[in-house]
Length: 120
Image (cartoon, rainbow, N blue to C red; front, side, top):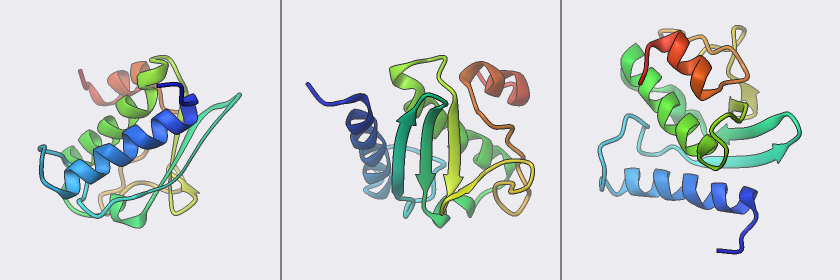
């Protein structure tokens, strides 16, 4: 209460990752994943995650872990543009997620994600 949107999102994402490490909820996010940074500016919400986010599971797991972060990050504004990075590198056509190469078109939005991955 009373926190800026940026601080509130940092706390929420950290809680998501902490609960995952404690195995309190089922998650496709690798347990050691950490939030390295979060910034909100005129272009959208920029989320920087640790390298652990890249590994483990197949393409379905990758899709759902992106969805968990995207939907959490956009919880303050459902139509927000979200930019996901790992260790400071934007996940996009040049830098796909994971060994199977899940290609994300940045910026991510809930609507675009549903269209691209038939997720709902």
